[in-house]
Length: 201
Image 1 (tube, rainbow, N blue to C red):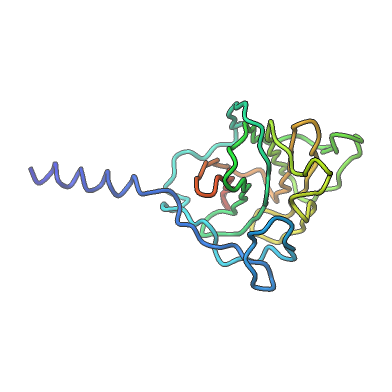
Image 2: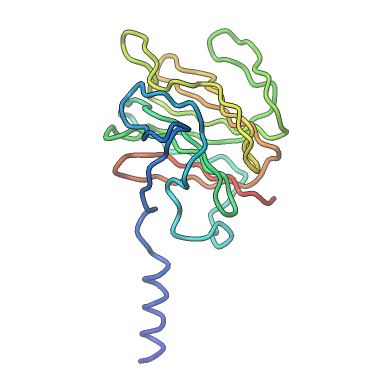
């Protein structure tokens, strides 16, 4: 009986609720909420920390991770921060449904989808985050995400750059110091696609 209670307790502890929700803030200390609010910095106070330590998770991979969906949606915010053991990228869709996505390492050169122009990126690992069907601009052409080319200095993540927002295809590329294992999570309230990049190989 004691062994059963212990086993049940361990299972409950492992199945904690989705990540605790904390507010990502800009360098001015204002919360990023309203569409079009300025995002002058990615310095943050630990947004969306996971319930488990990165080293304990078994879902890390260097292979492509993808889901197919049909609902067209709108990307509202992109943010990043470093946590204990990993860097995190958050694609925020607010109350809108999540799109299909494919997250995978790609070989250089990285190019813009419309012009084909090559994008100069630092590092040796290039992680493509493609979301379909989705847009990151209004019908009038107003960008929903203010900064589409962000220089960073996190342990692994060096830069985040939008390479496509055209014909229901939204793609961002994360430039990394090295091609480290990743994991992809889906969170609700607000709806988010979360990409973690482990600090160690």
